[in-house]
Image (cartoon, rainbow, N blue to C red; front, side, top):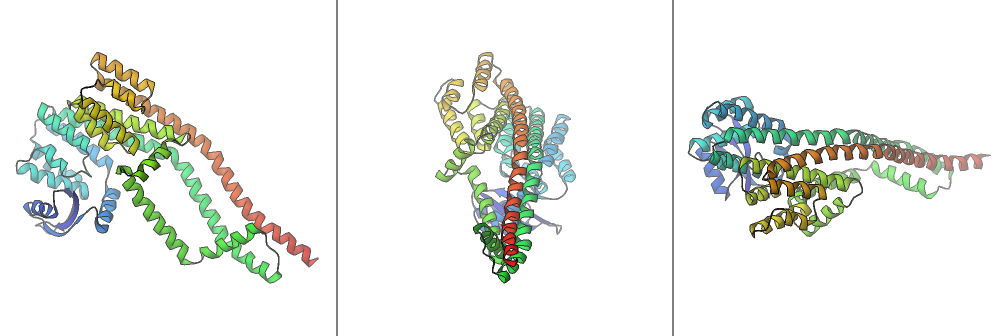
Length: 405
């Protein structure tokens, strides 16, 4: 279970972060062993714990994690012991949740805990994949190479996310601007005309009455409070859906993957991340079953996560590598063909990394097509919304002018 804590160090410095422990008492004992005076420890399942997890996620920096792995690899490759290397990186990391995680890891390593196990106590800062790769690097004596591979993974994953964000930035800005403009017209323009129409006893069409009612509601606090509450509920529901295997999470994920244009793009992005993760784990020396289990843990969405678990179970029963992938129906012919070639030649890790690059480029192409389609659609939607508002005002105005004549 993950616990979020706050406290004070011996020197009077306030600290806070997350830690995985079997119980609240175990988390407190671990923190006290680091000479931390604990003021609060909350599990992630409580309201305060959920809020702490959101706050920590907002302050978490993938760039800092990638830089940590890169610098750590250089220091270990130069022959510097792990403990001294961690001290150096702690001084460079500054303040924040990630720095606090490094302090905790350094204290565990000082007490004789393996680096991978110490990192595993901080699942929100180091994924199952990172922990598995570091453990394989420790066992195989290639920790510096493993850390370099982890740095590459973090940077490529961050680069893909940035490209997706950049491609969706323009449609997002247009949508926000359009929504703001429509709300402004409803809240400020419609009430003024409503007063005039009421004084002149002008008969109003249905659309005008609806828009006037909407404009009046926007001046009341209740709709805004309801909108804020709905936004918070949707946010936390989406966070739970990412890792949930419930019926509703499964249904939402299936619908998401069936969406036109966006569905195939989501599937390709998921396969790209999975292929890069699995290829990197195999390259680091992790066995296939362990690598698949760790890779499935970082995949978002019920459909692919459950499919990968079934594949892992089939491999555990002794089936060949390609057969369960083919039976899952989640991977296209290109993926299966290259995976088969990698299995036959003994280069599965290299083939998976090549597939990851292929699908990442495919996602970029799909994003370009999606934004090309979205731009005119958004402009048409904005024109239709403003046209409806203008028509709802002009029609009663014509009727009012006719009555005056």
